[in-house]
Amino acid sequence: MKSRKLFELAARADRLGVAVTRVALIVVLLWIGGLKAFRYEADGIVPFVANSPAMSFFYADPAHYQSHMNPEGKLVPENRAWHETNRTYEFAYGLGAVIVLYGLLLCLHPWLPQVAAVGSFLVFAMSFVTLSFLVTTPESWVPALGDAQHGFPYLSGRGRLVIKDAIMMGAALVTMADSAKAYLRTRAA
Image: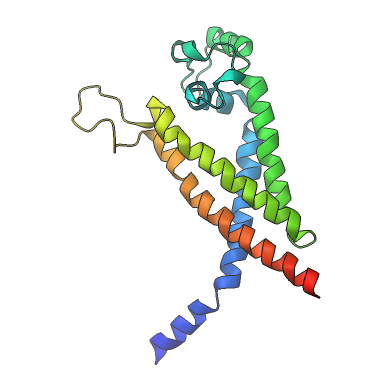
């Protein structure tokens, strides 16, 4: 009897789950998009952009990024200068603005659910592009440095960062459907 009550309670949590999912997407998009304004974050996405057939053209010299990588938290002035001429930071500012915009579109759900639905679709598409980095970015996999566990399926830190976009992709579909339903309800009323 008690377990049935728990399942009934759990079954009614779907609306709360959608709301929490939307808020979580908004927080992640605003935070990660905002971080693109900081150079350490821009430095960190260089392997993804430089190896992407769809994005490498944004950089002036994508082929030589490996010799100019800054370890997270370390300032190497020569590398920063290279990133300036590579357009690393300009690209990151633009990408960050787009990601923040997507987060703001999701915020409009209570007033303009149709706009939030479009925003969710854009997050879905962005997540699809991000997941493509698993195929295009060698740094997504543990390198062969002597350990037997390297390459596919052993995700590196960058790879683990990327694979999480599968969750964002699913969450974006949930919020898109919810916003589209809300919009259709307002049209029918």
